[in-house]
Length: 261
Image (cartoon, rainbow, N blue to C red; front, side):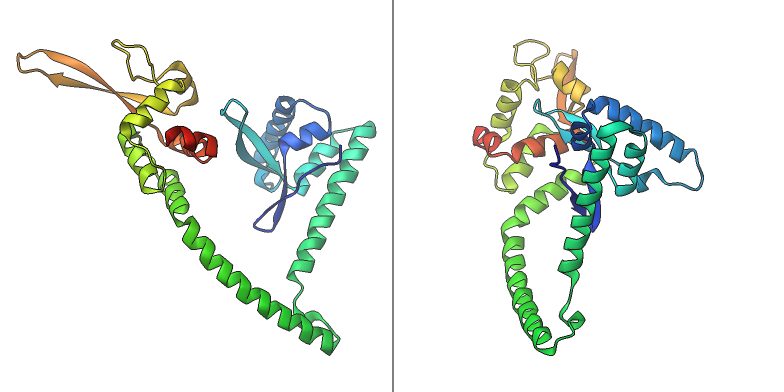
């Protein structure tokens, strides 16, 4: 029951609302409803910032759907705990206070430098160790940057895109970043996994209801003038900005990559 994970985000300690809900034995949807109520009250006040208590976030559930959640600061945990009574409130308070204190102490130990040690011999030993670790980290960092550069470029290119792109363009981005696929194979994957209509006909290769609900693929309609003067309507599937983020999360998993390959 006390397995509460503390997230260190730029030296700001946070806990996720799903774990809080599990700890206090409350439905996550109900906790989200409560937090939204707290946020509204805070945002209506000119002197308080809701992000000091609750930070909006998302997660992908077992059905690969993007779902809302919150990251709670220690102040946010205090607010949730203050609304609770009885044994659950006491246990929750004891657990999160202890976890936050442990992380704070761990950070202090990590930040402790050699110049803070009074004993000159121990200070010298610590200084030598710091220099060795620093050089080792620099080498590791250089290697990691070289290994991860394609992944970083891929994530950046997807995250920075605000416009929808063609399926073929997404396939090119994947291929440029180490995922061996092409437009035809990606189209096949999207159809086989229920994102594009597989049935032959007028709606072939258009987004399924699943894609529409997720907001990951949209249809761009256009017109085509044939040599005989007949004008027909064209429907082209395009990956939305949200869709690019969604699919990159799927393609990161080895299972999905093996399908593309």
